[in-house]
Length: 92
Image (cartoon, rainbow, N blue to C red; front, top):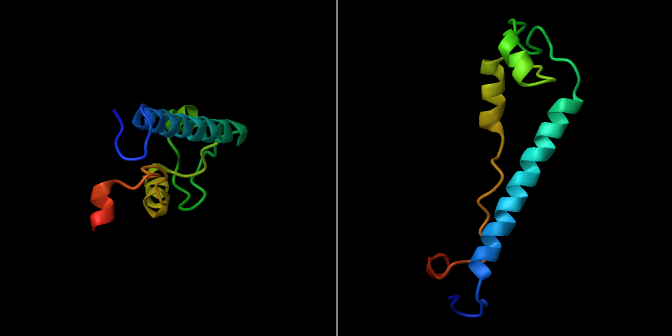
């Protein structure tokens, strides 16, 4: 049951679209990593050795865990987009 101007099933459609977009982003990231070639033996930023398990798990890895963690914190997380404003959000 949809409310307002939304048609029946609108919420489920939005969930399916958001899920499909997240899966597409994950697949693009995996393809990009695979296309990057061989993993580096030493970190590109701090020259610390990159563990063999990390190099095998992430083909094309160039950074150690600590340096990658710093990059991940600085990136803006994609997702969680509210395409249709909820009534509660409009009241604020």
